[in-house]
Image 1 (cartoon, rainbow, N blue to C red):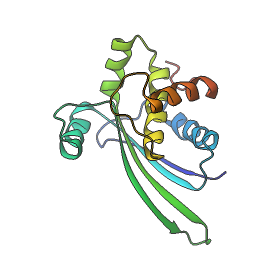
Image 2: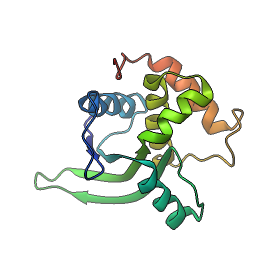
Image 3: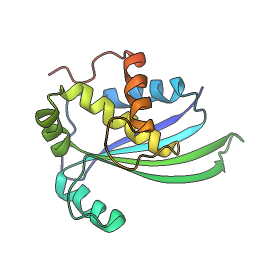
Length: 155
């Protein structure tokens, strides 16, 4: 399987030490979900940035942990290969950190959860609330357990 994953930081912020580990993790996630020729971008940001996106696109006047913006377009590259531009995932590092405190989770597990959550939304899955019995969230947690991926955040 072949996928393109692009990872970036909000302008003005330095990339964390684990930044280079995101692309290989997402490549594994896409492969395990049997998604091929997908293009996905991830942007890490702070709360003010995601707060504005949440207000603008969801009409919710608060920061959030992860947003997914589906694109859904197809294109053909110079080599004649077809690609699916799945969309963009935006993750707030501030909210990731506060989620860890609130839910008693490690930063590594929470980061993986948010990345998988974003991909599942790009794949067309959704949930009506954040209760753990939601079908998408049950799938997400089962997927993460089966994934058994090495640690991304080691510091």
